[in-house]
Structures are given as C-alpha cells and as structure tokens.
Length: 130
Image 1: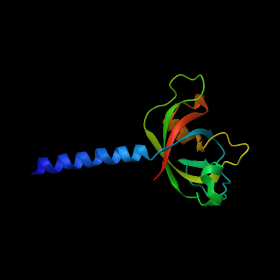
Image 2: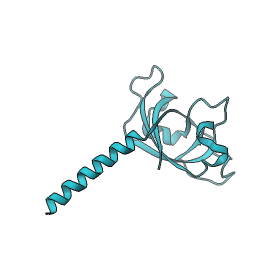
Image 3: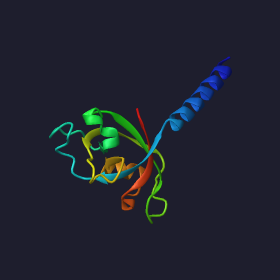
Image 4: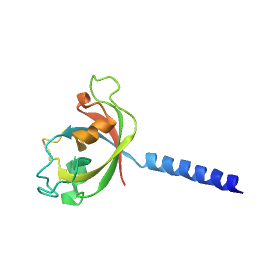
C-alpha cells in the first residue's frame, strides 16, 4: 500500500512540474548592481535576491513584492553556454523603465550569478510568478 501511495505521489509531482514549466513565460534577463533606492521600497534593504521589472511586468507598481522564479534557458551573445542550470527566486523591488531597460527582468548581480555567467550580460530566461 505504501509503495502504491509513493508511486501516486511521484506521478503527481511529475505532472505538477510539467504544468509549472508549461506556464512559464519566455523573456530576457540582465543584471544591475545599485539596489537602493528602489521604486518599491525606497532606501529599505531588501537583500540581494531581488529584481527590477520591465514595463511588461511592472503594472503601475502592482509588481512590487511579487516573487518570480527565473531559469536561464540560453545565451544571447557569444559567451558559450552561459546558463548554470537551476533557477533563482527573486523579489521585485524596482522598476526597469523603458526605453533604457534592456530586459524583461533586471536581476541583482547576485541573482543573475546563480543562474548564469555574469560575463554573458544578458540571457534568455523562462520566468513564472510564485
């Protein structure tokens, strides 16, 4: 009976992981290094697993405090295999305004370094709100 329950649990988790991947949105990520002040929290320190949202996510500030799981999918330039594998979860603390914003999500340098080689500067990503 326990073996059957474990099999059902594993199957459920496998299905859930496919749903999560299927609902991810493709975009790009860059990184920044000056974290305060931020559009959402002013001079309050929010740590280093943070990001700035482009206008497509910003939603007039409604993105503040939302958490996103970011996964590097490929490079955008000549750095070979910039992705490190895995994902990073970040909190939106700032706005990356257009026309200057060069990515969907501008990660802190520390968060970018978790998923990709910083020498790449910009990578393709999948992201999902968690």
